[in-house]
Image (cartoon, one colour):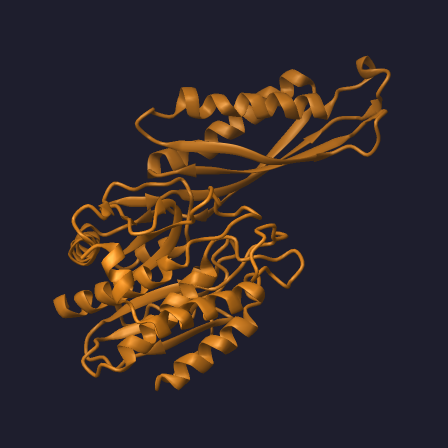
Length: 387
């Protein structure tokens, strides 16, 4: 079956519900650990499906269990939005100033609710646990859920992500690392400050910061193996108060990404050396603050094969890119680091131009909701069948 055939056969009423749910959530985005309205909507839908949902997992998460006499299969969807002012021009634009579903989590919740309803009508469904997780976007939602016991009695985990780098009808997966480890850093550059007309009388932290930014790029290009993908990105610069004042402090913030443990361990050490040495050469002081946000999202090969085989059976042999990788990150890595599982992408690129993730213009092709629902349900059932 092709994706076009699947879409033609998908129940129109169910697709209308998927879209209505997604658009309602899109109009009312909530940031990490603030997903109370979203959690209420999820709780009500799960209860109406005959399940017994529970609130409060990982602070604002919701989950529901099916009967189980063996380890459960965790089915996970994330709920949080991003701190962005929407510029998509969609008729269902965010009604919350400065907040937007700019990564597809509203679609993930819509899909997972539809899957829960489909599974709830089948007594033989399997030993599932459906998790609607808070705070995926760097705030530690998966870790909070794990600390609250979401993996107790769980033997494997599955999750999906709508993905605008793939067209509708395509599935992206990997038998190993699908997404990168995510690190966050800040660099404080300090000098004595002075008059903009007399730079020779002081040490300029703006110049020092500029040199540090340039020097950091040599780490990936010259000190990390070209076979080991990595990124060091400075994403913000803050400093100064007037056109004629050399400031006494500049702060840089950014992210580093890597797939392998060796690169992940090397990056902070190399960055510390570059920051310290470059600052000294510029006559300023600099301090690097570095923390790991998420480990790499690494799929279990057997679980990845299950997804690949299921997607090929449903969508056709040409539907799957089994070598997908991205330096984007995901806290699904918390779960996949502790139980075998698979995280995969569902193509959702909209027609009429690129709408990148984490952009104020983000939107996706809502036909992907139907494909995601059918595939997520089928993968879950196949995982339960194989035990």
